[in-house]
Length: 227
Image 1: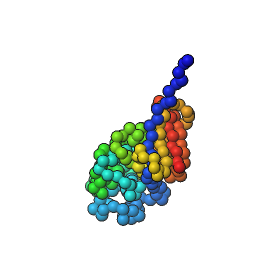
Image 2: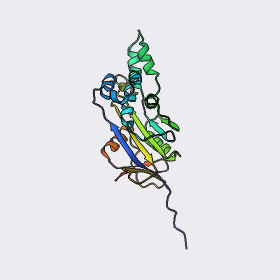
Image 3: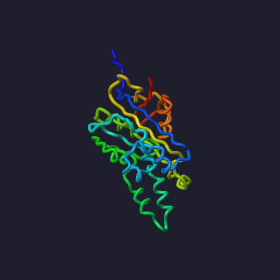
Image 4: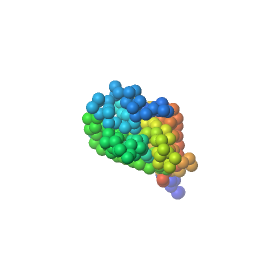
């Protein structure tokens, strides 16, 4: 008698912290500093980029410790900070230069809050950025992994396709403990769906709306489910 095919293996983690920041459409970095000032040390606030401020907002209250890891995803990162510096020419602004080369958004938050973590995994990309970041989070050995991402809204770089047309950020803490979880993200080696990998902003919207997702990845299928 022929044996049946084995059940495809699944790797999964459970969602225990979800915050998404959709700032006002016309908000600037200065506006974000005023709106979110109470969430950051005064010494760090002045040099933070808009994306750093948004990431700090969604990471506020996230249960992270020195044994945990963080996966960071962004396609364009601090393009607005770079735009502002380039616009200051020919009298280049030293402050805008300093901001444009400052550590990345999530590093600004960790440094300012003196928050040690075991590992930081930064990812940049477009088509499969969400899948790459999630796979890193699911394979990371730390008991808790913060999956964090976002963009700051560009201006003149948008026309060249090298800046985001919207600002947003999100943070979720993923663990292997199902008790009390708000949802679950998993990867199965079977191909059960044919939807493409969502873009980073679409994934952030699904987190904010607690909306389920399923898509075809490289060698398997992904699911985002809620309880």
